Image (tube, rainbow, N blue to C red; front, side):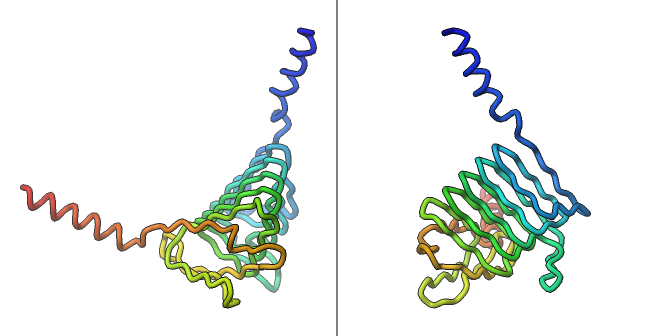
Length: 193
């Protein structure tokens, strides 16, 4: 009995031992890449055509090459986030992002030139910015500003579920708000002296 428990414990501890860590940097082209079983992904530049995250994998995209739509070169053309995986995008250029099956996508920046599609009710997309214009019945794209004051526009595909119900909007203060708070703090400090 002790041997069986020891073997079970050993198997459980080594479950993540086969995970792969991917690093994509400026000048790299990963082509088609599928992550599974706790794989991790960090992209600080470069490009790829098709990125798939599944099976508890996770990734961070800091930046990409510019996307050339007619040539489908640069940036990342298609991203699929599914099966309990998590992806954080801080910047870069993308054509299409599809989220499915209990996955989480966090958008802090970047440009989505094609569309964002959510295909499962237990999938969440977190968008961090301000000035959101998100009329779900008007048929217009979701617009707003990222925290660095860059405008964005994202076409939402609303076929299978109500995509807007799966998006969590996190309002980040406008950059000028921080300036006014800092200036107010300096004035209060100067007044006390």
